Length: 142
Image (cartoon, rainbow, N blue to C red; front, side):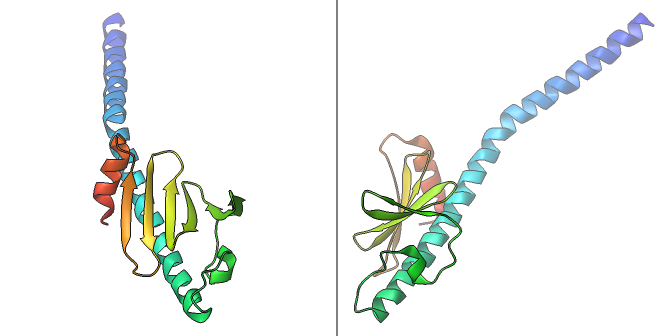
């Protein structure tokens, strides 16, 4: 009886250990994939905002909308004013417009996406030593 109980404990311990290794190795890959997906969504939103700003500017003598609600897109994030700039504060990215570009700045990683309103050209930038930022920028497809 004691021999069977010991072998059952060994099997259960082995399964727990195996699960721990799988979780430890799989979680970073899942987190990377999740951040890349969020970056692609943010880039898509920034492109839509830039297109809407371009349409607004064409109808209003080249003036961009200072208020995000004026461009005609459904806003899913609250709008706040920071340093005189209207910012959409979303869960993972902050969106704002400055100098004819729509910016999507990540809240935790030193990385930001820009879309030029006039040309529609997108770019992904990151701080010099940001490994996560460079990894995400390389896979966003800009």
